[in-house]
Image (cartoon, rainbow, N blue to C red):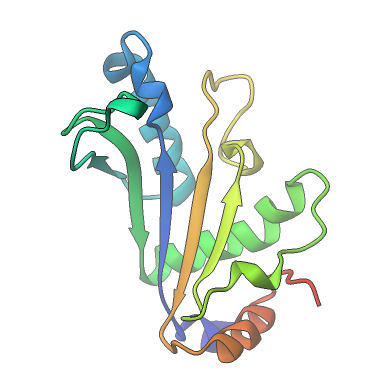
Length: 160
């Protein structure tokens, strides 16, 4: 597994919080809790992502915080991947494997979690908000077929 980890460039973890930003006292109460949970899951502080332009239909203003992003490399990436593959994915309800369509033409694997409670660091009794997480695994080799073989060797449960 150690040899295969060297073939992965980075892991990007995103969480969109756009809809929650409309809530009262979100900046004071909701956002710090989401940042704390995301930091516990990834082992690294998340960077805030702001809207680049206003979109009236979505009630978004330029400069408003709409998401959180964490880029993992090295040992943190390795620990996060092992935790995701061995602990989080099996805890997903009705999980039967990831579709091959989750791997794009460049070999990036995208995994979405509807809520953060599948990760072992999150205690259901203590958390007040649930949020979705998107995990993108970026390989160094930008070939889709080679990336699928890499993911299978890492132990990622891909469907046939």
